[in-house]
Length: 485
Ligand SMILES: Cc1cc2nc3c(=O)[nH]c(=O)nc-3n(C[C@H](O)[C@H](O)[C@H](O)COP(=O)(O)OP(=O)(O)OC[C@H]3O[C@@H](n4cnc5c(N)ncnc54)[C@H](O)[C@@H]3O)c2cc1C
Image (cartoon, rainbow, N blue to C red; front, side, top):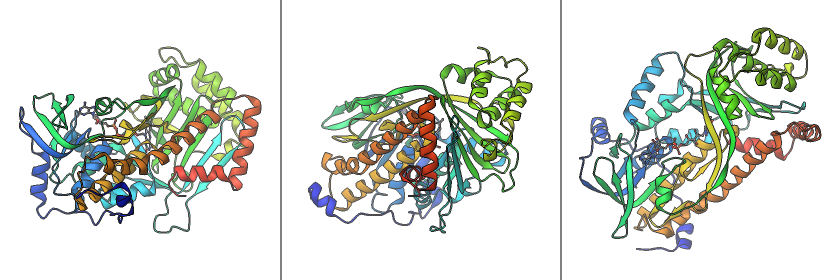
């Protein structure tokens, strides 16, 4: 039976029920890891291209909902999903943290929990109850503390290693047919259905094709959906830092806005934090090549010292990562100058070291697809939109897409509608397009607001930040980012 959009909108929303637990876990594992035959044609209901966290979360959501568990779902991933799981297990036992982490909002955490994938993560997920944001040029600052009105979920957010989240989801794929280490070589259409050609010679035809294949989405190209946006001309340096333990442990997320981009220290445990330092591509490659001790000196300077000192020292780093003069001496001088000032009173933890091999740099861009759906196609995660990481929202938005699309598919199944029909998919696009666009705009606006050291702008900006700290709409925007508003 076909129902209209209006009918669907009026229909009761189907929340995720308790996670569907297969009666026989061994069967579920075997089904999930079964390698589909090469050179064959596979007919599916839902074909998800891209087994990153977002695509895997969608597959888990479909598998865990009794309404959609019977659907034939295929997940195609070019990388090795199961080696991620092995690596995550090794990292679980080892003390070292992965350098790719995400700040998950309470909403995301609850969804992951409903999928049954949170418990396994909980021992290494680091909740933080305080978020301190401050201006690297003026003296503006804003501080958030977790809301006592929500005692069941008091953290502002949790920091989680991506690899562990991924492995926890992979273990819950149920009967999903996984095409592991298989890339999509082409997508065509046959008989009105998308036909996904795989590098091993086989093909998948599906009623619904989902693009979860990241920023350079092949599915998006197939659907002829334009992606609009720009590159920031910045890179985000990530690294795992050893930090000194604060009086209250390491329970605060710190973010300082420098004119070259924000630098954030996100807590991993009492003695480790994850770094995300946004800066120019040239400086990013120099900083990544610096000897570890000099890198640590410059992180301390960037987090604590006056902006002119940060500028002076970072601009003196050589093209091949040669430290500036006597880097340690210069850094100590800059930090001594900051000691006792308003800046120093913010007291982010002092960085003591950087884990070997943990430095990496990623180009940053803003992109939004002109549409998130087309006939028999839906885009989710970075395939649909890419956002600056300063508010830690990219993955949260992508997981919200997966949740929304899974709900819409379940609604379609419940009323017997064709799950690839554009009328049904429009319902997903309606839920996700406007809030995502609003988030993209806010984050882009913040990045521009802080991306200057012009004296007048810096003064007004600091004033606004301080006012917002007392009360105000800016604080509400930040709390929206943190998913607490
Ligand atoms: C420095 C940095 C820090 C960040 N911090 C945060 C944070 O704190 N919080 C947050 O919410 N977000 C954060 N993000 C954003 C977040 O990392 C991304 O938004 C998220 O990882 C996107 O997930 P995805 O699954 O949509 O895409 P991806 O992770 O890009 O996954 C796409 C998958 O598709 C596969 N694929 C691609 N093409 C094909 C093909 N042809 N065939 C088969 N498979 C294919 C790829 O192998 C890949 O596994 C950060 C980003 C950066 C750069």
